Length: 434
Image 1 (cartoon, rainbow, N blue to C red):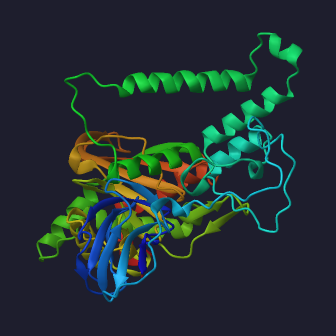
Image 2 (image 1 turned 180 degrees about the horizontal axis):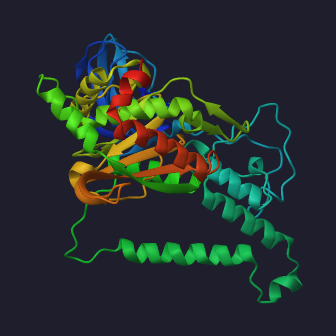
């Protein structure tokens, strides 16, 4: 028997949702024939068959979110009748090790004596979860995770703390109606869960939109970023007049290059001068890693939601090459044809929402990157010059979100000032890019 498992098809993915099966039990398949369609946090991908044979069993139902390593389909290779029985879906969870003396049912991990073990326990927990554990003085190794693949969640931390503090209280102390901060938090969590249940019960005439697939993955990614990174948003105005005139001159000689292509090129120049914004914070090793590649992610709106393809080595490309690559990636994103390589390795992200009419925003950073710039609507405005003359100029708003753990406001202002200088003075480009 051959087990077809969910493998890592993206950059560090840990789980995916089963969207569609292309086969059914009893079908004969060939090598590399698409078997199942999976939605990850970045893309929709097809998993091919690793061998020729017959579909013996489909283990996981459609719409289910599973972890990397989960068996999805069992194949009978070559059509031979093998005596091996496919593993049941729940076989992934190892059976508990029998001990000579079973602990009392009411005991918790803190009350039982530590067990000798030669195996190193693998802890799966987000940085934010680990931070909460540290704040409560909890050794995260003592907690049993209830999430996927044993992942430790924030709720696991709160539950553990509540049990720990409750066990430390004497019977006399328990009789006094005094709420500790942890107990208050637990009560708050309980109230919120109850309110969530009440909200989850829709009215009879309410329209239901399934919260899964890319929308669910986007929500998880945004939540991770917002609760992990202390966001600061810096705003700036960019005078687009000279750049728009320059693009008009180029069109007269049949060269059509988008303004965004100029933005991307200018950003790579500014990033080289301020590399802290082309960095990623490694909290575990307590270092800030300054990336040597300049891979610009392009936040792209599609029918299925937001997706971020990446222009790799943008600093090595000309403005025209960036324009061509931008068109190619945008088309592939909207058609759902992006490959995993098209979304790997981003070091800085931009979002061009101006064509939609936006005049400002507080964008969420594409974790684990340090910065993101959103470009907003360009509109003609009356501007007072240095000579106190009133002229009409084309002004664009810019919003830059950055990780305040990695960079400070003064550095962000200097960074956007450098970008502003390049965009407002196209005549500098031959000198700066030479």
